[in-house]
Length: 251
Image 1 (tube, rainbow, N blue to C red):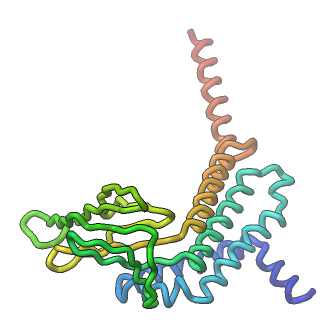
Image 2: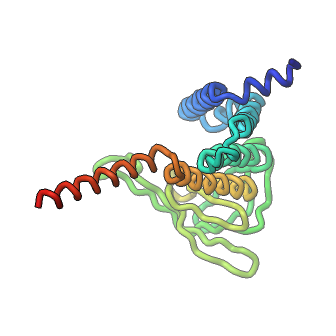
Image 3: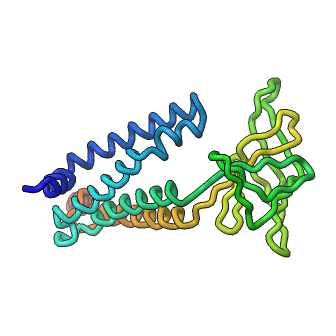
């Protein structure tokens, strides 16, 4: 058996799936600790943009495809499990596209001023196809303390000959031409805002498609004939019918 065949044989097992998912979880946990302690750029450099992280993504995608073929999920008409596997593979593919071709950076704007520049982490500057004006910035603190509870930016996004007002805060982002704008930080004097700008239309579309497949797979796994959930429902239905019949005989 050649080396390639041995690798293929090793990858097409449920054990490989478990090991790779554990490695991915460990990598994500490490990235979270790095981001908390050393910042986002450290997490990107050590984990998210590292060559081994892309290799791990590739191995997981290959594993999901090989397992579905090895166990003949389509032949056994286990469409739910098949969609689950391909959903995971598509989501990982979308994440890989994001890392390879998506880019993001920061936009700093003072109140009353405008910007159409994105400053990336590598020092490059990207000119955006729209302009953002900061109309107002507000910082809300917890009662009786100086700790911020929330902060938000009222901005105007100028796109060609049209303009629209948007409020950006922690759980509300703005979108424009494939770009997404998040509230990231603010100036110490509370007269300026820092927005995180992300551009990744292809990766997002692929990832969303993967989530749709995943949801369809979950529904299929629960409802298809022979599934444990379907079997449980049938047992409950039979039990209910037996109880009703017994009560009818008693009456």
